Image (cartoon, rainbow, N blue to C red):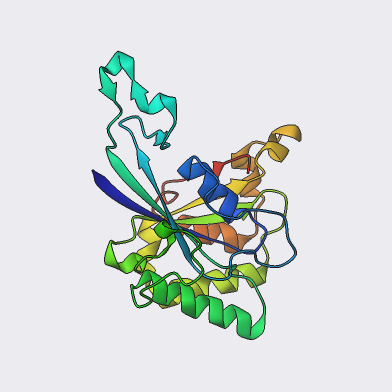
Length: 214
């Protein structure tokens, strides 16, 4: 099977862990509303995806597809990395940025915060980073502090990481409730965010960020 590594970054409270759970098709990461970061260290979880990119959940009757003549075979192994918040303050921010960049370069060999077998993993650098997902919230402002923190992370990882980057907005339903189109929402964003999106490979041609309900 093809192996894909997706890394989620963004400030505390934007819904990184919930987004990871949506990608994996199960509650693999602890996700709850909190005033402080729930994720203190990088955590890794896996999912097997079928040919239609649907998660194959062990024990789920749908794993056996009678119409297909047997068991759904995984075509992709999805590896999702959840990270600490990138907008905490002071020494904690520096510690988080240092930890994330070291983990993604493969310098940290074990996920010390793992609570099950698929969390004890080498860093993402061992298998390559296929997508860096910037998780933003449609319900909160994009601040200068958030922009600075992300720039510092890119500096640590190298500008090349932007070619594999994509942005999503959680709580996208709130835009729909206010009858706001995502294109208009992005046009009203601060210049720092618009410039950041323009450097991302997925959005360089003007493709808008992805909206999710997390």
